[in-house]
Image (cartoon, rainbow, N blue to C red; front, side, top):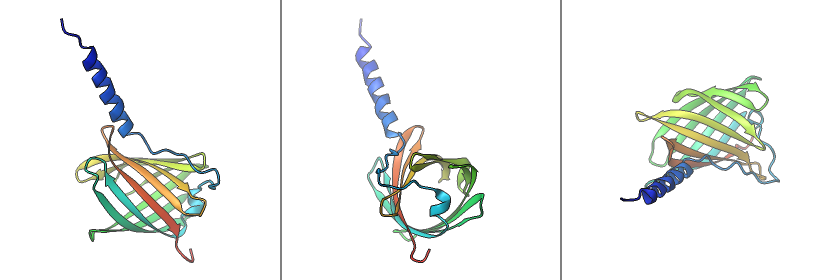
Length: 177
């Protein structure tokens, strides 16, 4: 009689490893960081640099973004103009409606269903699914202010519970905004 015990432990180890791959970014924020309030940070112009890293190949895709934001007292509109290092350009527009203090629902042209965002401590979490090249992938973002006033956005990108990539984006208020 053969034992299935080693194969069960291997399967459990594999499942634990795969679950860890898809875990959302940590929301730990420096004690000296101020709390992030989306409708206070984003009105006006924000500029940033970011990178998407493919979790399987390690390849990177760098980009710059300019975000023009408006707040009408209920909805935060963010027009994002992306310029990728490979020459591609793209524009996306977020509309995030505040449904309660620190709680938002939203949409963007490529978002499947509704995005949801909420304040967690000094950070804001944002979760949404995107249609990308015929696939739907899930984003789990954590946005937090740095003590210097810049905003860091760390996102995990997943499919079927597996992490396929990550995004790190640093944003700063544009001069005069």
